[in-house]
Length: 526
Image 1 (cartoon, rainbow, N blue to C red):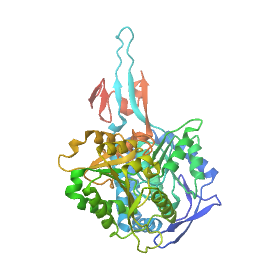
Image 2: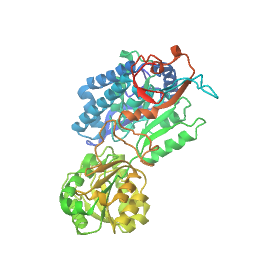
Image 3: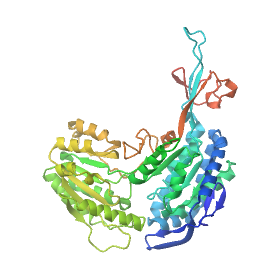
């Protein structure tokens, strides 16, 4: 570990601004000193990425797949050093570190499989018809091409799976976009180790220098300079609404505006219908106590809002949830700053009129450990106070007691966009609430039936996104192979000579991919 920046394949530390990461379990700084990237280093990284794009953007899927698989191999070769560094910078347990590493490797390999097969480019061919009247029909061929250099912001709550070689980076590299990572200051050591693995893989597979860079930063200046750089063509971000919106606005004000694909958190409403509460309220309380406190509540899919219709069963559920959640031992948060934000946001919500705290872990805890809290409020009060609608990042949840189904539906329709919504229903009960389900569908990117929102499966059918502010563009997912679509744009060739076309669009279909040919899906040659 050097504490330096990777500018392409070169290590560099020209700046004077330094910082250290923090071990929240031990409540002390880690030993390595990291050097923040300078304006000169930022410019060099972007220039290298722009040059690399000219080569990397036209490489075959098979060659890029080899690169991604080699990255996965090199990450695995880091062994215990990576796991130990992850834990020392996050306060998260070893099992979480191993799980995130496995998820990171799985994402890289799934993208490698996707691009090696090749059909993901959505090739479409409409052949010419010179005899058509009154005007001849031209030959048109379309496919997806990469946008160019992408900046990825590492996420605070996922040091591996959503950071240096996480989903955004894997998808952008698979698309043919060089990546510059703005490493998260809370886990810069983990980021440097992963960056070293990516650089080793790039050299081993003869990738152009600049296909990847990793830049350190203590504050927001490095990220701002990257988003403003004219050589950057897109941004990926996972984090707070405040941070994501600031980057989105910055990118929109550029002379050439660029897309910012930001996933910005959620309170993930859970609707518990009356019969389900009556028949399994006690077991639901145990299930949701565990979900609320999982990972110290530091997931963007944490169930921060539980909604039910007032009756004895809901009253019993609130009591059971309060009883169950205080039996769970508190755990460590990612950083003192995260703990501070949790306490501040929690107190802001708890201070609102009409809110009742029904569970608050009151025993002594270690430094940087979070006390879980459950609150409750009347539906009318919730509707009238937008402060109650905001995310409290951590082990916090609110139960809203609605007067009836109409008020419940009204509350759902008034919520901001969310990543997930959950419906808990007894057998046959859900069909009694079609309008409520429709209202929930209109506010979320993924709807769960009789489960918990925590846990995001990495697969082609997953949608991890949703209406703003859950994400900046609800048409895309940040998880799974379809997230590659964020980093590409459609491009057409008209009346182009066959020998000059990319292989994906040539008459002979040398890659054997599935294509749309005159409005029919086929693997055939022309």
